[in-house]
Amino acid sequence: MPSNTTNAYIQKDLQFSAKNYHPLPIVLSRGEGIWVYDVEGQKYLDCLSAYSALSHGHVHPKILQALTTQAQRLTLTSRAFHNDQMGNFLEKLCKLCQMEMALPMNTGAEAVETAIKAARKWGYQIKGVPPNQAHILACTNNFHGRTTTIISFSSEPQYKEGFGPFTPGFELIEFGNLQQLQNAITPNTVAFLTEPIQGEGGIILPPQGFLQQAKKLCRQHNVLFMLDEIQTGLGRTGKMFAFQHEEDAKPDVLILGKALGGGVYPVSAVLASKEILGVFQPGDHGSTFGGNPLAAAVASAALDVLLEEKLVENSQKMGQYLLEQLQKINSPHIQEIRGKGLFVAIEIKTTSGPARPFCEKLKDLGILCKETHQQVIRLAPPLIIQKPEIKLIVEKIQTVLQEK
Ligand SMILES: *Cc1c(COP(=O)(O)O)cnc(C)c1O
Image (cartoon, rainbow, N blue to C red; front, side, top):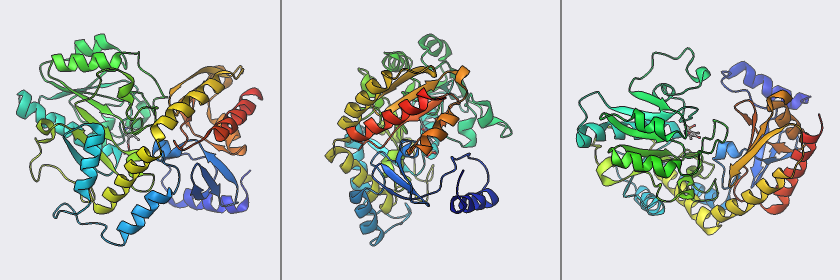
């Protein structure tokens, strides 16, 4: 039972905040590295990392330094003027992604919207699709954000219920099904958009070779292959990008967000060739905060930390260790354990009930995680995590999965 202190905060949220979330009953007030502290002073290991936005850990000193230094110089210019931070940041990002150009935005959903607009305009201007006929393919069980256009191609009834009418021009194929992809492509198809591993959908890995083959199909039919790596990108899966787990699966359009902001500031981006992003002319598209100097300084530091601290390698090593240790647990509740890097799912058998009570028990043992899609406990700790803390996670999970 939450104490009076905790309850007072929760009551205020319940009174004044729309109830579009159902958080665990815990009120956090401080974070450091992989740890967070609640208003009672209790310490927890953060295994959610704000849906992978906190890959660098909480309040990383170097990222915080970049934030405060830049905050004292210049925070916002709008794109009506140039600033002295954006160009350097985008150059660094383009080199890392091996892309020619980037378009900076703030949230993930905005970056996905930007990619959709780029693909449509590319379709009309370059591919020669007749006006207003552009067609985009996406996958069942996808998650690409919450805007009205993006939920138009969600297969999750709750994301759509009550929010129609929807944006036309999208069609779904089953995630991982190449035959369906091939059958769905028409002369008006401008893009195929997918996550390389479905995150909110429950950490679902496609069949090996799917991305490579999908890219090949796209190339054959002059369709843009667009990967949403907002959650999987920047080391989460043990490679810099999840598409690198396959040969020759580099997308035409790469969408990044979440960890790009170093856990302190919303920064997202769309990366592609000059041909594709070149379709935007002044006035076509924009964002007041997109590419602002504070965002650029923070994201630039976040990229530096990722490389300097070898977080991608650590994600690979620690992820593999976590997976191996979890697979040794003998519990009647486990349906499947899967994942790549520090992106791991424990799927609970439906006969054992939903995953949420397991997450609530883990919280009581000092491990914070959140269920996704009813049956799945998602483990995605900050990429700075070390072996002793992985052992701690495994020990607590073992406890929770063996009782009940
Ligand atoms: C979180 C997420 C988004 C949306 O990002 P927001 O910043 O919440 O708008 C889009 N795509 C994927 C794969 C995500 O995980």
